[in-house]
Image 1 (tube, rainbow, N blue to C red):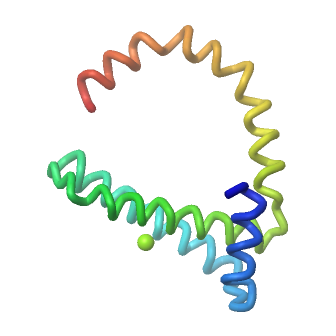
Image 2: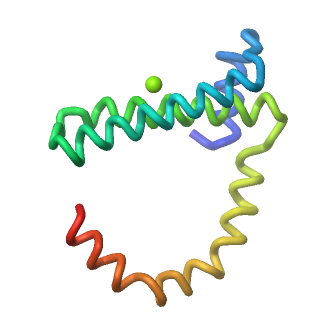
Length: 110
Ligand SMILES: [Mg+2]
């Protein structure tokens, strides 16, 4: 599914409900917290069976983000393209500057 299609789908699903924008923002924070909780369950407590729940919470987060973008009339695909254009020339430097240390950290922590 393309990003604009996801925005249209969420609009069709939730557009008639008209959550207040502030409620959508708070719900997004709640969903991000739920993602964090599942990561703690998996990474700290070793509950790998929670991976399906993690995927569900990430999807909840995406729906909330899309609803928020819809509420503000933001074209997420266009904004994403602008962000990637901004990040692309910088990413090469990040790889050069941080790849080695981050690989060591991942080997140690993951
Ligand atoms: Mg959730």
